[in-house]
Image (cartoon, rainbow, N blue to C red; front, side):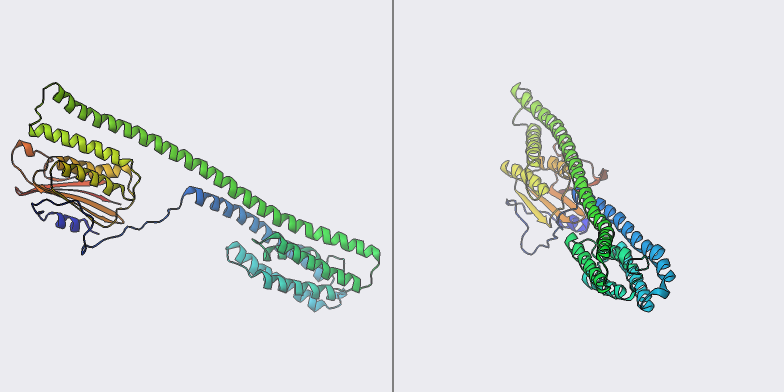
Length: 410
């Protein structure tokens, strides 16, 4: 929403009759400010650390599976192809698993989900076919590549899931191998070799799978603990800084109020003097707004402005408070720079006042219109525009009304 809308609205003279401070009236446009939970370091940091740890483990697993399949399995298959019972099945199975492994590795490294059970079913079908096709002489040789490499491809297929699924697949792989061994009519020594092969080719993939999951979990927990500690430290520092600023501000406001009360007690100030009355109203408004800063309310800026408007009304000033839209969350310093200049002018207002707050997601405009008065008692900021850090101030007077505006833009 443009600040010009708030400006053009506020420059219209308010009625002279008394009016209560009001909420947005029917028929007025309202600009809701988006409100939602902002991501914090306590959530983002653990996810980032866990992602980095998991990606490193994925790269290692993909590299082991493909390197073992190509560097160890392929030379052995090519060297013993003449001794296979069905060479085409063994070579075709090797090629099919290689293609499936490359596709699974690429998707895994890019974070794309894999279809674990269809892929695992394909690998087990190739497993059974190769065991049947290698023949009796190559059953326990390196040319029977499914012994050494199939477990690693099962790890890729089940990555990110529970270890029980991987154990079940490796158990199925071991049963397929046992059927092949028994089918070839081997003696008890071959069963011992079978047990050693199953243990040797299954333990390392399971260890890598469980180890990577454990490391990722520990990394996430430690990052979450570190992020929570940093967030607590930042909140503590911010609270201490806010407390120091509040004490300093309270000291300044209390000193101003103390000077007025001291002058009144010493008889150096006349309670009927308009200037003395203005100083009292200004000191009371600042104290009231300072108290309102610490209130836990949905819209702190509107709450603080309402506190100033209530005080002005109690002192006999008819005032309209009109709000359009919902202010976004603002730091205390920004709220002070938006409200303080208008609070000072409001303490000097006579007759009536109109306070308007126009808010959008990226902009807040606060405007005050009061009758203009002549003479030294109407002294105020000179007309014109100037910046107070991230907040712009604009003052105008035309002899009939006095118009002041503070504006913040993201």
